[in-house]
Length: 281
Image 1 (cartoon, rainbow, N blue to C red):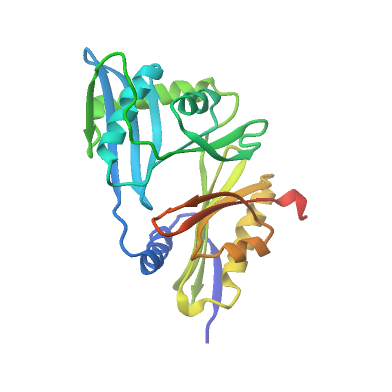
Image 2 (image 1 turned 90 degrees about the vertical axis):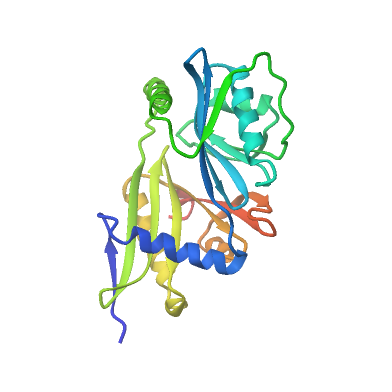
């Protein structure tokens, strides 16, 4: 007989089980999707003047941590990203809470797909997309390197510039992880993982093994993480879900669709949904 124990997994002991379980389910629905991580560096006379990390997932390139001295450097940086991923992805995704980044990317043709208000409080997190692979016109050719392995001395500059940026902010950029799991007589059944950042809770992964579905386990896991957020004074929540996952489930819990991306991965839609706990409590 099943005996379910819901655990606050503060040591993240079952984090790999949660991610691997969901990844296997996604593959069963979409087939194998290539993944890739790259690092791009722009140098001028040996000085690092631009850098970014990218991740290929769901047939899109996600531009992640980034630094650039000016918009001309950004053009060269993104040109190299475009050249590397051409024929591999549908397009490029970038999001930021920083108005300067948003302005610069929009100036280069990125289109706003959605936004989350009060992330952080008084600000907004803007989600931008581009499917344009044509290179930007640039004033100067710099030394650009793309590599799977990070170049430590170059990456140190990226980290340093990011630290300077964080110190200049009037809000915290700290990320705090949270995870709950459910066990059946000590064996992993499922779990939920998320993180607090910019006055929001992002629910990253929710997974329950197939044989245990239909027993309100996912509902209980969502209750646990939402209650934990409320107790911390965090009332804004969001998550993403593919069309073959659980959009209906989240809608029943009061989540509202704020963004929709086609061919993410190819042949499928991805939805971003949002919920404000103040509105329902």
